[in-house]
Image (cartoon, rainbow, N blue to C red; front, side):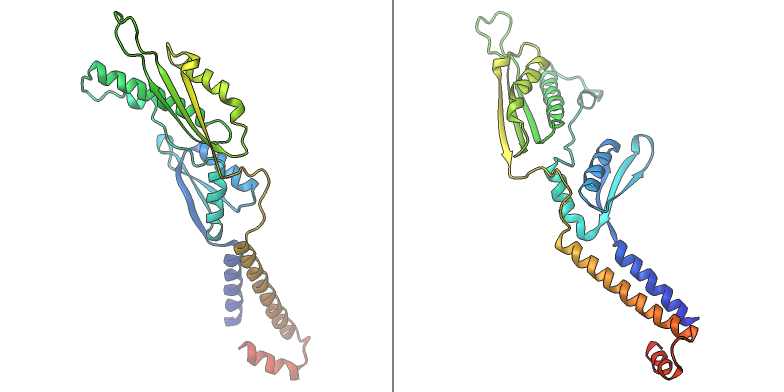
Amino acid sequence: MKKRQIWRSGLCLLLLLLGGCKTELYSGLSQQEGNEMYAILRSTGFNVEMEVLGAGKDQNVRLKLPEQQVARAISVLQRQGYPKQHFATMGEIFAKDGLISSPTEEKARFIYAISQELSHTLSNIDGVLVARVHVVMQEGDKFDKNPKPSTASVFIKYVEDAPIETLTPKIKALVSNSILGLDYDQVSVALFPSSLKRITSPEEVSSGSIMYLWAGIGALLVLLLVGALYYAMRAGWIPRKIQAPAIQKLA
């Protein structure tokens, strides 16, 4: 009975070794972002799990995977621009707080809200890691003969091999059409390539993963050998002269 318990304990330890202890990678993710990050990790060979926590407005997603894969998983997600930065929405910026704002404050909040919305939109372009939009609205009153025109500057950091440069005209058109009175030629776009490259195919197993794999295979072979020997002795397939010292060693 005692030997059977030892055998079961060894089997459980083996399963834990092969499965690996899962550790938290990211938590508090939205359902959409969690699904996208999960799909990226699965398609690149990671043993990732996704858990949905909470309900309703408090619902969020947590990603877990073996501890030895954490560093490479973070690197893979960064190359794809994840996790995404949170941008304030119009509703959040103009939420009623019970205070009366001055026209200057309202204008500043409006400009900031537009910048946040545009930055959020541009960050959803494939290959974009960071996007910022800085808006300067037209100054002067209606009696000013030479008012300063509205301008916008766009900063984009992107994955090196992403075709972002070809999208510059579309980016300028998007920004100019989103702001009343902003001319297309008053929009400047600054592109900065990152040293990170996108991953389009599953990566090779890292050296740490190989080490754990061989350790698991070795433990499995040892347990199978011990189990086969024990079963053979119990079945009487091994002569008693050999069985006695073998049992003493197992004991």
